Image (cartoon, rainbow, N blue to C red; front, side, top):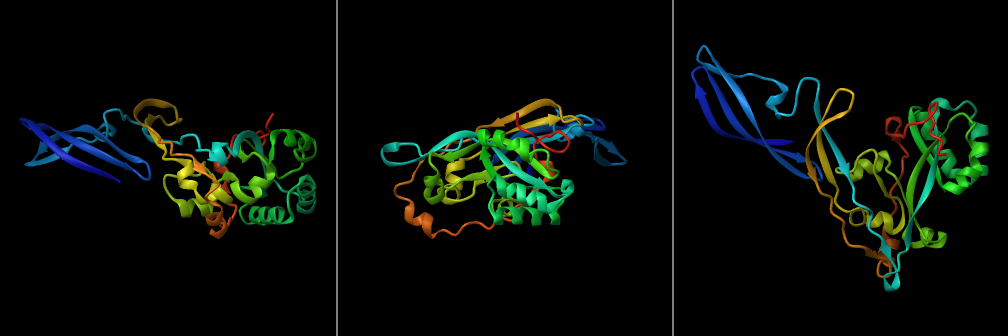
Length: 286
């Protein structure tokens, strides 16, 4: 969405220029204000804009367009008694499936269950993968160390897909299960519910306090507005909007609210185009 306010018009015979103030509204982030100049020409008593990409912004040229990159601040910590942090940042791997590559569902299900996924996690992911074969369907998340143990068994199986990430986790499994909760890649349903400024690459709270206080823990994102070429290369950066880190969340006073809040339903839909680059359709963390 954008608003335009006309400024001074300067005429020179049958040509003219008009200064225009532009205000672009970036959903869920902020607004960006800039200026441009319209070039006009009179023909048969009527004024026409001499259109070019630079009419929108002087930095735009043929074959380029605007690109907005959302920048999230570091997720705020969840604190316990005395301000002790209850979360840590660890390298993890999301183990998932993609229906397009599955050749033997039964063998794949057994392998995932043996690796530690629950029966429901396996069935939900495989059903979703069958319905949306070009989508990445996360099954479960493990530590980097655990992935390295599982890799020789899981990686060769057709249909398995892996995403390397640095995931936040509670400092103990008990805290994760009963209070702090977990974070993970946003699902299609969560994206519809949360809306802007979240996008396909966002990581959000999935359970516990991480889910209930998602907006406070995530903070307010900033963005960069750039001009990019047809190949995606950045030609110019026009503006940077700073992100905002919100205060930490103390866990001790939030137990009852966590228990009262229902979990989000997860349809486990993550488009293939949202994934990390991968070899032969799969990303294998080193």
